Image: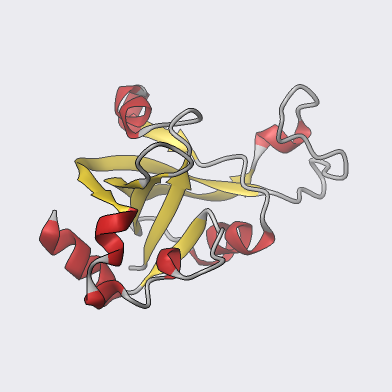
Length: 151
């Protein structure tokens, strides 16, 4: 099993939105960064766990835990001219973008980015590195265990 951190702007999909969805499951679509896409397409497996992280909001941070419940498949938004994630270079025969589906495991208390930065145990966590803008990052098992222990 691998561990991840997956960012979502609460105006797109919040932890409460996920909790209210049928099956508490969502397609993690709209990713338009090749490295993040490759994490989903090439490395994520069913059963992997991820921290659900609210970004671009008043108080960014971890707000829940999800489980990868469906392997990567072509992101339908790339084919929809009405979508802000439309990619005219993508075709159904040659998709460029993929998504996985995640299912809510649990909502957690907010662990803000400020709080995450306060722990020396998390000093090397990718989300805390300067210049990191990836919406999906791997989480080291020791970092995962530490964060779960402070929930």
